[in-house]
Amino acid sequence: MKNILLTTQYDGTDFCGWQCQHECRTVQETLQNAISEVTGEEITLYGCSRTDAGVHAAKHVSNFKTNSNIPPERFSYALNVLLPQDVKVLCSEETHMDFNARFKAKSKKYRYCIQYGPAPQALWNRFAYYSPKVPDIAKMQQAADAFVGEHDFRGFQASGGTVKSTVRRIISCQVVQMAPNVVAVEIEGTGFLYNMVRIIAGTLLFVGIGKIPAESMAEIIASGERKRAGKTLSPCGLMLMEVNY
Image (cartoon, rainbow, N blue to C red; front, side, top):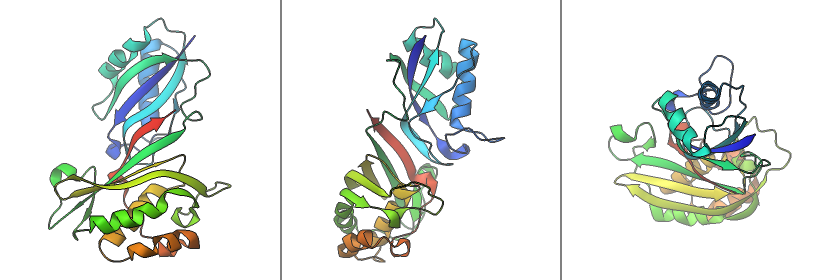
């Protein structure tokens, strides 16, 4: 038996998220079906992150165990023949038998894109939230610095979260110009609460357009009050960029 690691890229627009759901198109089920067809085995695929409906991934990591004699590096070629255009395997490789993509991750990096200006850009509509107002990127970065470190982020969690602790550690939080009229919030952390990145992005956008003072961000985080943060931005702008093990 071998443990195969897949690095996968997908456009999440037309998926109901990563995790298998009843009568709903998901990335996990799409991949599992393709793997089962290639191997002739019943496959369980373990993913690094259960991304929500509409969320994308540049380098999503997953793994499965198989008795197939297909060379590990050839799985990507075999699977991509069967997979639809909105999900592809970038590479496949053998890993050690105790590796689990979900439980072994040390940190994850996300990117949230925001396009702005007088009209939305057609080429960014599937991958960026639209704001008609032009944000002040310098003020957004000033506020972003307050998120770095270990904090109780209970005020940046959507309702429905069931975790025991809301303390999380953010390694970096950067606001960068991605393209003309497109700004991105790039954030890396050891773990995230439910919709935490989308709420942080919404809060920083509110700072950029003058709805929240940049200098108040540390106080807002410490308060733990959801109502003081910005709104939860739509899933289209969120992309899982990288997982570190």
